[in-house]
Amino acid sequence: MIKIHINVDTPYDIYLGAGILNTLNWTSIFQSYAKRFVVISDTTVSTLYREKLLNLWSEYSPLWLNFEAGEASKTRETKALLEDQLQEAGVNRDACMIAVGGGVVCDLAGFLAATYNRGVPVIYIPTTLLAMVDASVGGKTGVNTSLSKNSIGVFSQPKAIYMDIDFLNTLPDNELQNGLAEILKHSLIRDVKQFERLLKFRKAHSEESWLLSDKMWLLETIAESIRIKKEVVVCDEKETGGLRQILNFGHTIGHAIEQLSGYTVAHGEAVAIGIYLESYLSYCRGYLSWENFSKIEKALKFLKFQLNTPYLSDLNAISNALSVDKKSTAKEWRMVFLKSIGTVCDNYVRAFDKADLEKLLTWYRESL
Image (cartoon, helix red, strand yellow):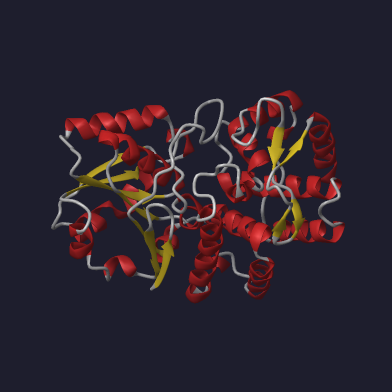
């Protein structure tokens, strides 16, 4: 088992391994957090794992609440329904929540825990690759609105995170791709060796489920991605204009695609397209060499990311989506630009305008 310590204002540990849920001493773990426990999950995870986990935690008889799976449920309305259910069940401040699921569950349950009775502890048990390498780590919680993604929420750290890669065995390939997009992003902003290592492993494994073909490689890859995010988060825990902004590479365009699609485009697919366009704009600005852009383009295609989307055809709609991006100001849009593979430009985010966007979208339509 790999243990990673996250040394933020409220420190916590991440425990990562294969099959660890069955070997952990849950009695000891639960005794250190609370007397009563509430599981927050979604319908997909509940169908697969509810019975098994309730048996594992039978000594504590946790209350199990779930909502409809999918990004469309990550709303203020879902949070309010869960709050009503908690109050109806008489859940007080002596409870601890356990988020079991993907990124939507972690974001929503984390926000719920941070505000319910002015804050109760929460434990994350991520069940998707995306949640393991991104959503569960760093303390960002929140919900979407019809106008923007993740714009309503709080920074709130969990008590601990338990990651068991055996959960990934039930994931469809498109869900694995979601997590792969974030792993790729981490390597592009911070670690060229991780970028090269990822492509080298992919070249050596032709099978469809190549990400799951070597458990030790997968554990090391997830751990490295977490360490990259950790290095950033501990320097700028609450994204106060510092280093943490680099984690948004690919997300300026990516979040716009998600919003314009009504959140029907998967996060990883949107981020991959965002990486593609934001890398090209980095080249157009003279920050990124053509050689490095070409490597990124080839990597995206080699890793089988779908780069074509119908949601980048309306310039005005995209402009409106960019205006509510959390990095934007009243006067300008901003994004993260790459200087090379593994390095972002100084100042973390830089402005771009409608002329940049128009040029970018013209190139995009011609490139595919």
